[in-house]
Image (cartoon, one colour):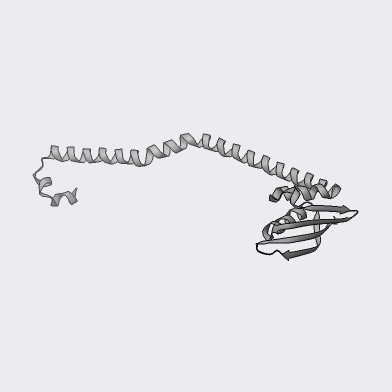
Amino acid sequence: MRSLERYEWWQRATPRERVVVVAGAAIVAIALVATLVALPVASALSQAPQARAQRSAKLAQARARVDEIRDAGTAASTQAVGDPRAAVERALARIGVARGAASVDVTGARIAVTLPAVRIADAAALIDALARDGLVVTAATLAAREGGAEVRAELALAREAR
């Protein structure tokens, strides 16, 4: 209260008016604390169980997706070892290259893929996709094509030793 003593209006106020001013200031302070602190905390606490349930559901979905991806990858690898032509076709589809844009020749253990016109990035993506399916490149030839950003890609593949 001493800090208020320096104001003239406080000095002129009667004791009853001073009590009313202090009580009003206390009520305003309590209302501010309730509005700015207590209500948001109470709201967050009431929503916490629902938010936790939502996060748990999302986590369960993510785990299920990871399991599906893992199972699909295992199945694809198993299929690739058995059928290299199917593995090449899946890899072409994965990177968005039309099946008709490539020729695939499987002769015994030798697998040859020829892409007459392909972007270098797509050829690299194909090599990566084939490696995931258990086929490794033993030889690759890239020849520039006239007037474009495409190349002719010839890939020799073999089954990965496991």
